[in-house]
View 1 (spheres, rainbow, N blue to C red):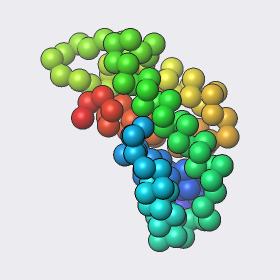
View 2: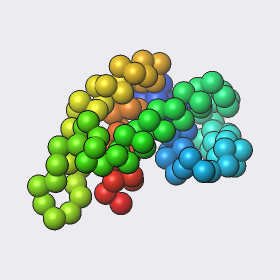
View 3: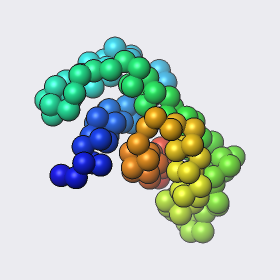
Length: 122
């Protein structure tokens, strides 16, 4: 495993749990799941500040993608079905990397595509 991947394991594990947390969700349940995942994978100790930062990233992405055709990243749909190409992923990634400099770029890059799939395509 590369050193860069080791730096993002924590963020990736937390974002994987947060991805399924919606605004009406009980945060205590989600945080218990995060604690369990971090402990089982032996990634590190639970850090509330870090989790809150990642939750903010997830919430901002979820809201932006939820705007659909009103999103500033929405390019329009070429086909009959939703597709990743409907959003300007590179610009979205660049903007979110700038907005969240303390989150590794690799984690944001991977999560943007997953968030579009989860909140738009699916």
